[in-house]
Image (cartoon, rainbow, N blue to C red):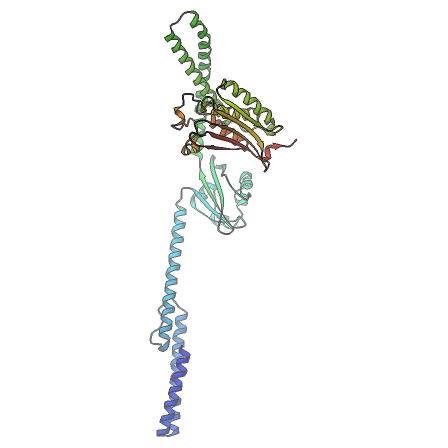
Amino acid sequence: MPVLRTVTFCTLWALMCWLIGLWLGAVTGWALFGIGLLTSVLLMATYQQRIQRWANNLDQPPPTNIGKWDPILAPIYRRLRQQAQATQQLQDNARAMLLAAEALPDGALTLNANRELTWCNQTARRHLRLKPKTDWGHSIFNILRVPEFARYARQKTWPAPLIMPIQRRGQTRTLLIQMSRYGLAEFLIVTRDITRIQQLETMRKDFVANVTQELSQPLAVMNSYLEALHPQTQEQGLAPEQQRYLGLIQEQALRMQATVDDLLVLSALESTPYANGRRVLLSQLCQQCLERAQARSAGDHHFISQIEADITLTGIESEITSAIDNLLDNAIHYTLPDGEIHLTLKRQTNGTVSLSVIDTGIGIARQDIPRLTERFYRSDHRSARPHRGTGLGLAIVRHIALRHDTELTIQSRLGQGSRFTLHFPRERILLD
């Protein structure tokens, strides 16, 4: 410690001067003591001045030849250099991240706790027509005056993105907007231009709708003639081989007609906005769907029902009927003869209602379950069954579930059957 060392030095210097004074005389000794003390004070003042000048500019190396302060200032300087290098590295990383964010093809902008704009990249400026010089620090609700966005951004959570049209230079662009929290109380908004995707999706829907509409009428005419020809073939004495060929033609025509009908249903679900729901007697509807399924099964399966009475909800009866029929048809197609099919409808303790179709069929592989609701998707195992549907039934069920704010869950294991459940939300359940 410099102060202690200085005091020790001064003490030793005084002792030495006292000894000299005993030898040469008191006056000479005190004179030498004064000179030595003054020299020490001047040296300390010089060291202090040099250290103070260094303290005002810590980026420079510390001064040298400052006595006992050398071993103290050197570690301080090394620590300062390490901190400066770490700070510079952090600044370089932050600058690189900002440059990467600027190069993103998606827009990104950040808001503070008051939802005021704090930063955005160039893509977000282009998507939302932001002006950094004037919009910085202003509320996003004053910058982006769109009612749909205001309702979306004021939510506490954002489980799904917002699809929002934006007018720009006389053209309408479609943006997908996703908001999330980060940090302590900040918000991140990511924007993506999906105009081209929307256009392609519209083209696809229009194409499917037009093709199925064009196919529907010729198929109906062909099926009507085949039905008329079938009884005549036996009267005219056609050969068994010819009758078999005619039966195969009729079977394939009916299958094609079913596919066209399902495509028309899907097209209508995608293109028609959800209308105001009406009161649906779900318990009665389940019983009617079960009776139709038993007729289609023709006694090949054992049906077991547990339908809780007097359950009603708000929805579109025809769509809910279609969803239940498709789930039951799916169970019939993939359950071997003498298998069991269960239809259950019951209230849950949290106020929701669950409708389940359970079968003892061939089951589904785990890797295939996430894709079952895709159009025409078939797992290799299920496609081996001789009785196949159109491959659109579960896609129809998924669309109907989405339109009714309902969740479709699928549980299955190969060789142990499947469970398909519609979870109707509490908000749609009517209390008598």
